[in-house]
Length: 102
Image (cartoon, rainbow, N blue to C red; front, side, top):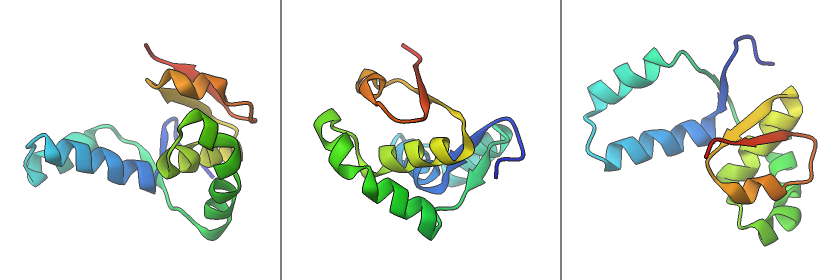
């Protein structure tokens, strides 16, 4: 369960690290920058992985990835709002409230 104000799932955390790394941010700076965000990182446990997998058929028409499904499954479990910049997520008809930031 989320104990702070901001939560990110481990698969999505890994995606952020990968994107910043590809952009050329050195590992030390990357760690410092991400630590400064003070995000709680939720592990991908068996139950969450199952829920994300079960969403595959419903999210395929929206073009959502495994990472996207993991995020939605975590948000539904935690009853949390999802923040995204991908407008396709607004078509999601699940329990999680999705807010597009652009």
